[in-house]
Image (cartoon, rainbow, N blue to C red; front, side):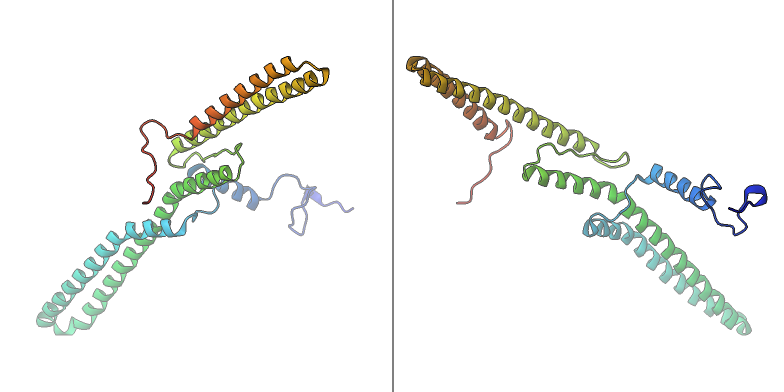
Length: 242
């Protein structure tokens, strides 16, 4: 093992013996923390391309129209100005024309830059909504697949935070209902075992009493499930095609 004065590797490479983190990694870490603070931790900002691109195009259509209108108006003014210059100073016509062309190109370039900036900002803004729709849809599909313990966790900068609260409250109510049903079924299972023992011991009357209790509990469970299938108050029933 070689020792280098000052503790620095002459090759300029960072090793474990140097300690700390390289300057590039520290810079990237600070930059990532800054972007996460303002944009959130989402890495893919195009969650729903059709919705986000359509919204961004609608947002920049007005600017694009103004850009075309301003370019056409500036071009007409340049033509009129070139005519006036040609009448008063024919020798300056070429220089004036090239200067006006540069001005038009500069106007178009600046306008396109702002259109691109607005397009990018709209993509970053719409992902706060598209990400919510994606997560809630995924959670609903998990519920459809029988995973009643699913939850939705939105990021701090996402829109529609109330959807997170409503979704998690709904799944929590489903889990509570399922837990109540499991406890009821566990009680019925215990009663069935007790009925079997009563039959084995020859106590037919006691077994019949327990059977009636089990039938009542099963009927109560069935009625409760039937009530859950009914439409909520104020919600119109689904229309059936004739």
